[in-house]
Every structure is written in C-alpha cells, then in structure tokens.
Length: 273
Image (cartoon, rainbow, N blue to C red; front, side):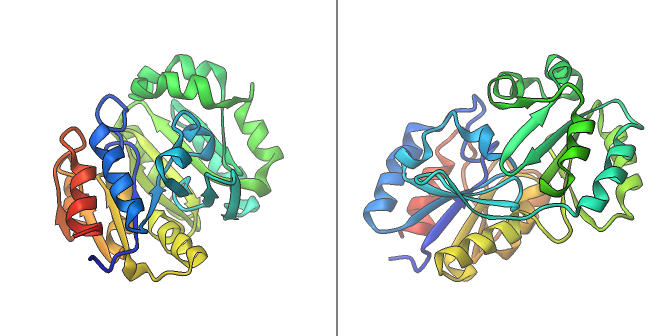
C-alpha cells in the first residue's frame, strides 16, 4: 500500500465539480481510503463559515486547513486547532489601498467571513457571480466592513480583495507589494492577503504537524495559483486536469479534471495504490 497517510484537497475547481458539487465517485473513494486508515483533509482558501453547507465530518473529511493556511480546523469537534493572523498594524494600510479601486472587500476573522450586504448584490461585477448564493448564505455582514476590520485588526486571518478585472487586481497587488504580507492570485480577479509566509503550503505543513505526520507523507491536490505552494511542499503534489498552467507546472502528477472523477483517481492511484 502507498506510504502516503493523508490527502488534502482544494475545494473550488478540485473537490467540487463545475456545479459546486462533490461527485458520488469521490464519496465512494473517501470510504475506501478511510477503511485503510488514511486521513482526508481540505486545504482551501475558504473561511470555515463558508464550508458549513457540506457535511465534511460525515463524509470522512475530519480536518481542514482553511483561509489559505491561517486556520487549522477539526470538523468533527467543530474546533479551531491553530490560527494565524495578519499583524494588526498592517490592517490600516491594506484598507487604505482597498479604497483606490472598485472592489469587494472580504475579511476573515477567526474562521468567519465578513462582507458588506451591498457587495453581495454586485458579485457579478467582480466576476464572482457563481459564489453569490454561497456568500449570501454563509457570510456575516458588516454595514461598513472597513470599520469592522479596524475594530478587529488583531484577529484577522485573511483578507480577500475581489476586483472588476485582472488589471485592477494587478494595480492593487503593486500597491501592496511593499507590505510584509503574502499575496496570492485566486479566481479571475481575487487577490488574497495572508500573514507573511503563510499559504496553503504552510497550512498543509501545520496540519501535518498537528497530526504528528511528516509533510512527505501528505498528498496535496489543487488546480489554481493559490494551490502552488501546497503542490510544491507536499510529498506528492497532484494537479487536476482542469488546472491552470502554474498549478500544472508545480505538480508532480496530473489526473482527470474535476468533472471526470479526478478525486477518486488520485485516491486510488496515489493514496491507496
């Protein structure tokens, strides 16, 4: 049997198909993995609050590295095992830069996503319309999310900045580049801000440390820019067939896409074989 003990999956574009569903073939593969004592986990940019629509503990996915490695979570116990925060003194500078473009600001505080109600109504303008129902159902709302962020500056795990187009995102990235934070592209127009040096890669490493296994015993599976650190640090990095060029280049192996049983394939070929 494979020497890998854990498989960690990105959510959007990886574990979820193009209809934002978990495929039946994936659920069946989870059971095969659990019967062999393997550990299943998430490594996602989503906040914990954005994951409540899926019964992960019932599926056998016990743990999650959430909000791009800033929150390690136990779905069975509903407990935060570890958290990291952006230094409070950097929050005002990030917020000031966020005012210079037409963008949607999302703040994640100890696993909970906060946005402004008006931005939910405009998510199509930020090329995030596919997530509108998710954000409406799982977000906590602040009438002035920037004021909320300032009041909670010492507890912010991650900030997402959703722009109207990639050019606007690039301008924001350039303005924030001098700050000691990590910046990653996601989706079409999103810029993710996390504590310096923290990413999906460090999140996977933190999760392995919490569980007492080595990173070499972990498989990381993803498809996008923000998955690259995870794909590089994992004992085996696996890219979905629908991955962008950056993820394909970073991966050790490529499997079927997220609509054609890719998750079942990675479990059977690499976690169990």
